[in-house]
Image: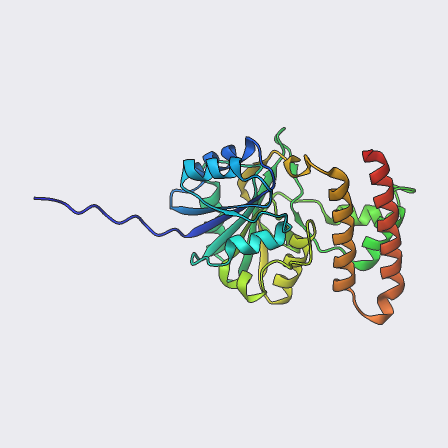
Length: 289
């Protein structure tokens, strides 16, 4: 008498990993992801580079789906592409330089499922030395952001920078946040789709700040879940063209300020923030040469 084999359980999470000329860290990402959840996950690797050889090899090894864009679409646009046809209730968007701790994804999903208003949840991001990176932050105010951008290089101890940095500290308890780092972000698909996903206009950087802002305005909660922990190796997306990344960071910051504070009476502070960002960009580009 034969016994029918049980059908595999449907995945509850689609994991979208955006890469650009990845190295060995992608295989480590996929290997540790397998330990992060006891339930099935879908892994979609979106390769923004011109040579998908490494991404294809990892995808074939672990049974992931590869989306080779053939061009650098930017982080948010590529993440949207990877999430486009998802049927799972949850979507994770993560960098390839994340290493998952055992059970970390299950812990993150369980915390988010306990609160129906949670639209996004983020784990504690550990540096390689075990310290915690501040990944759950408050939305920057216009005046604090402008004062920080203008004076941080010339006057590091200025009051705007002190208040800005104090607001960015990560506490050790589960709590709501203004925005969560896009390095590893769990999204309720319903909420992500309701706000239109990431803004494609951000090539790289600040797309996570903007998403957290729009989720909050739509009534969703961004939840920091420190009991779920992952290690952020860091820096792999900066291996090529660091000057371009510096410019992209400042362009995205300027876009966020313009879109977040569009009213006519905010023009002077917008201009001060733009000036500060231009000065910081020039300083950082000189230092990178």
